[in-house]
Each structure stands twice: as C-alpha cells, then as structure tokens.
Length: 181
Image 1 (tube, rainbow, N blue to C red):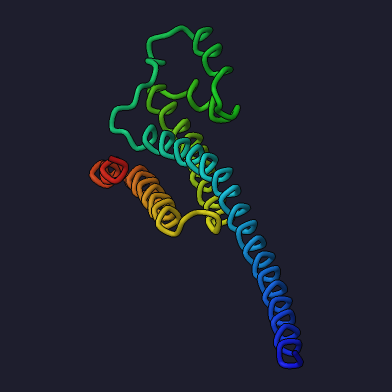
Image 2: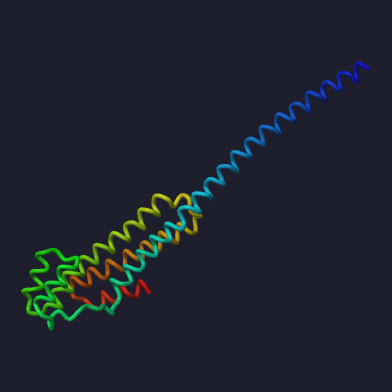
C-alpha cells in the first residue's frame, strides 16, 4: 500500500506539472497566434493603401513620361480666352505672364506646365516610397521587395525624363517612357 500511495502521489504531482506545462504552452501559443493575427491584420490594412499609392505614382509617371502629350493651341486664341485659360491653370502669375508675352505661347506653356507636373509626380513617388519604407515591415518580404523595386524604377524613369527635358535630349526622355512600359 505504501508503494502504491507513493506512486499515486508522484503520478498526481506529474499530472499537475503536465497540466501547468500545457497551460503555459497554451498561453505561449495564444500570444504567438495573436501576434501573427495582428501582423496579418496590419498587412491587410497596408497593402491596399500601398497599391493605391503605387497606382497613383505609376499613373502620374506614365502621363509625364509618355511621348504623346496633349496641349491646347494657345497661339490661335484671343487674348481674353488665353487669360481665362491661364487663370484656371496651375501656373504661377509670373509664368502666366511669360506665356502671354511669348511669341510661341504653346512652347512657353509646355515648359511651364512641365515643372508643375514634375513636382506632382515627385510628390506621388515620394509618397509611395515613404509608405513602403514605413509599412513594409508588415508586407511579406517578396512583396516588399517588389514594391521597393517598382518605386526605384519609377524614380529612374522620372529622372531620365527630367534630365532629358533639361538637356533637350528626346532619346533620354524616351528612355524614361521605356522604363515605365
């Protein structure tokens, strides 16, 4: 009886230790699972925003680098219509005045509006890059890598367009469009 009594005490002690270990493991698994779920939840929140910023940046870069640009024929309109058009444009007053005084109003307008568009494109690309840098930790590594690569390629396309525009090098400007494609 004494041996059975000792055996049953040891068995109860062992069962108690096992129950404590199981409880500890449950808490550990629950906390790990909770952490994984929170990371996935954040991933599901951030990926659509990142995609939206990518779409915005890509669209703006595409519009800037496209070899097909449309501008109104400002050379053939009356000064009243020109003033009305320029008042609605994003140009600064000094730029509007330069367009009004230019003998080739279309070229003057194209040059002025290019820098405004470039500024908007730079902002969209910077938004994308900052968002991926801040929230990329929540992306799967291969998706973060792809977002980073696309962001770099967009910056490169914009740089080629800007440098080509400044140098009046249409081949270099076209390389920006090729990058986007």
